[in-house]
Length: 256
Image (cartoon, rainbow, N blue to C red; front, top):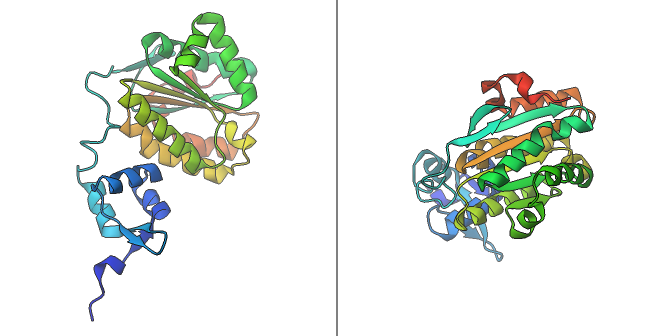
């Protein structure tokens, strides 16, 4: 007897999100709107997905053309980092080994964004966050107003990589819906150490971000790694997850 196709290759929402390299928030939104088929199983009506449906959705244009997270018409072409023009959609990695190195790229990156009207996000542990904001305040007098209005959104991280992806996606969608055409993310990645996230999970987060949010939104993302905090193998793997960095002279992204 031929099996019902709905019972073949059924994946839970976490597995489906991994297959598509998107967050679970996206899957819920697409299934709720009817753009992606799912099956509801059990008393809790949990979502289950057929692999063929996911692959067809990934290969087709439906769900991407009409997504509110797409870059809005008229979005600026890009930003400038260290005098280099960087297009939106780039996901870059920088390295530093001193406190001065931490602010070398981060402060100009955020200040330029605020002056340009971009929605900016600062993801960093409490100490690094305070250090960066102190130096932003020294050259940008309207910092407090930017924080109060949400034009600069600070965050000290989340306890899992998936929670961080979900947080960023939800904030990107809200920013886009509220009219923000361009986004910037500065991530000082030692936040993951403070939350006890393993390096394997951190690299998984970077991979999913690189192939999903970084490409779907009009955002330039700059992840900083403090070489005093991360082992050499982690630094190497981080560079692998930021292949956009190699479009540019690498010495521009290595701090003091």
